[in-house]
Every structure is written in structure tokens, then in C-alpha cells.
Amino acid sequence: MTRLHFTFVDDTTSKDMITRMKKRTATHTTRAFAVLLRPEPEGGFTVRVPELPEIVTFGKNEKEALAMAQDAIELVLEDSTANQNIIDSEIPRIREVAVSINS
Image (cartoon, rainbow, N blue to C red):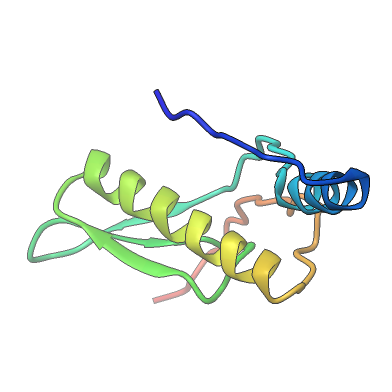
């Protein structure tokens, strides 16, 4: 358990510290992202996140691939927040389209 100790010298100092503490307080929300797992011929899975095209990662098995995707998504979101970039909040619709190919 971490203990924090604050010493307030005067009223102005305490207001400044409270303001800084409020700025550091993060609001946590949970959001789901679609991921595409592509089995690789040599084994493992390549993972892409359609909503975040900068993410391409890999895992030796499905469990590891999903963990790597989660880690990559968190890093991209942290970086976007730090740089004040806005991530589109609309969830993309992923559908399958069947086509016929004459051979």
C-alpha cells in the first residue's frame, strides 16, 4: 500500500496542489476493439486492429496474439491522449462480403 503525505503551507499552496491533483486524475472507460487474427503458415497469428491501422502485432498462439493486441491498443491510446490526438469514437462495422470467382 502506498501512502501519500501532503503538507499544506497556506491556503494558496493547498489550492494549487488540489488543482494539480485533479488534472492528474484519469477517468477510466472500457471500450472494445475489433481485432483480426490471421493464421500464419509458419505458425502463430498476425493481428490487426481495423480501427487503429497503425497496429500490426504477432503472437505465437491466439491467447498471446490477443494479449499483444490489447497491449498495443493501450499504448496507442496512451500516446494519443498524451499528444491530445482524438481517436474516433464511432465503432466501425465489420461485415463479410461473399464473391464468386470464375476459374
